[in-house]
Length: 136
Image 1 (cartoon, rainbow, N blue to C red):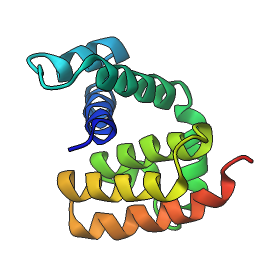
Image 2 (cartoon, rainbow, N blue to C red; image 1 turned 30 degrees about the vertical axis):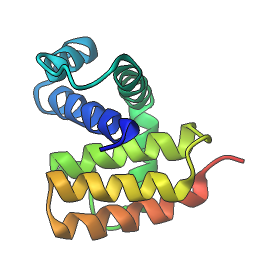
Image 3 (tube, one colour; image 1 turned 90 degrees about the horizontal axis):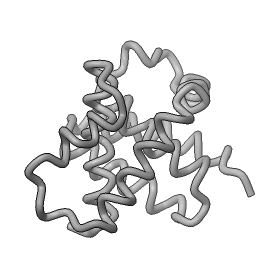
Image 4 (cartoon, helix red, strand yellow; image 1 turned 90 degrees about the vertical axis):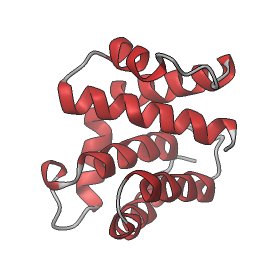
């Protein structure tokens, strides 16, 4: 697994903990990384950047996702799917250095690993609509 994919998975796991249990960002990140020696410093730094960015823009991301997720409120979405969407939406809308296709492909692979096959189609559809909102 590549370094950036590993970072995205770490960020997702921390987002999941923060969302499910209301755990503060730093505590969620520490909990995920406890005992994980395979992630190097650069990977953890990128994961931390994604986590911080996603959480700091959460209201704006939720609004953008809700606007394109037809007939789905965020509360109805499975926890994993909701947080994969937030993470990918953050990269799409706030991080212009990662190509759109890469962001979407990574989100689909991660949701395939942590959720269901139906979720891959749902996440792909939502992100396909969100990609047009990318600045620049």
